[in-house]
Image 1 (cartoon, rainbow, N blue to C red):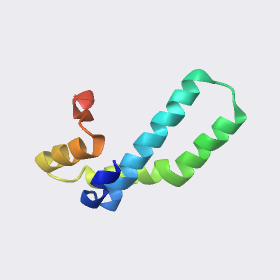
Image 2: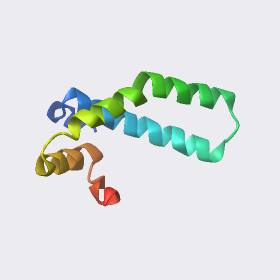
Image 3: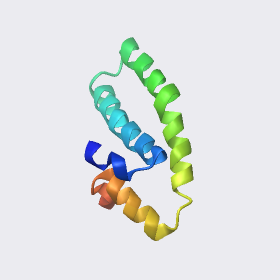
Length: 84
């Protein structure tokens, strides 16, 4: 992702970073359901990154559909097929 940062606006960078971190936390949650430290880390993620990324996604989603799809393709690294 770091190679694309110059092409992404701050909202898109927030979304991409949150996506990576959310997936990491999700994998850990799938393995360890009861872990106070993990839940505290999840809360920090939501407070510091997750809610900002949701707001950024709202802003990004106002773009015309064609532009939005191309930006999401860049942002998700080719993972747009997963959204269909």
